Image 1 (cartoon, rainbow, N blue to C red):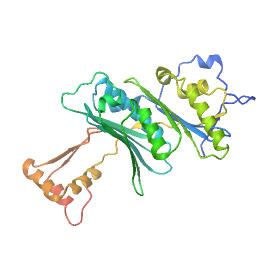
Image 2: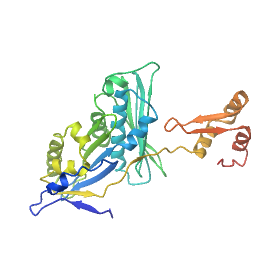
Image 3: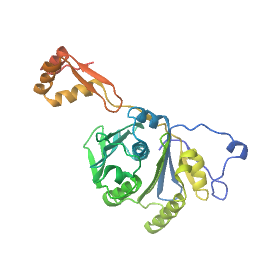
Image 4: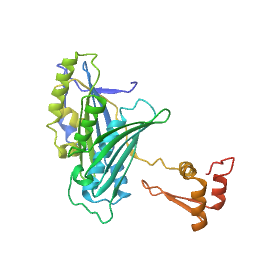
Length: 316
């Protein structure tokens, strides 16, 4: 991979905790994503912790608590899934349903730029609820949108009460890759852990499956509050203290919106000249608000003329 790694092993091949005096130092939590592998095995993983990026998404929406928690889990999940991208592009999760929450969406680029949004029906104010209760009958779409090449989308029905279970069903049914996820959020922090089996190379398929199940059993001991409270490296030490775990240098997810004036202009072109000019005639101005970051883009009559001119001048 070309990245530096930290291999927490002693001579017996086990993870070792830092000295007690270092453990006692309270380290501030930051937005971090760590990838890790288990040496001489065909299992990989990722662990993510979010704070500032998660709060930035919530500040743009002012969502009821259950929706804020689901958005946090979606942000953590899409951040984990972004680490599987081998090319420049974006991966997104989009849940649609017929319940009080009609849409919840999060996406993340290969460069770990996150954003998310949710839409509730008018006057809806859910106080409690899992993903099924919030969205009702609906589906979850996982979309991979490469910077170059064709878009890929997989869809699974919402049949499980948790986002992690829905995603595990997707990988089992659509990708046929053994995958487990643990997700949690509390309105201020969001975190997640992913374990995934790889094609058997270092182990036989049976050995890989047994080892993957062993690791998943260890991870099942992880509680949601513990996932939020501890830093990523401490959690990995605690969970996999008997394994040869190699951890890559962390990356820093952050909130960022992909909107721009040029992309907004392209959207207006796609609406068609007749539609856009009718807005100009009615209002004298075309205003477009980004739902993710609330950036507003305005186009006057002169700019609309330029937008639909034969030269198709770029607007800045």
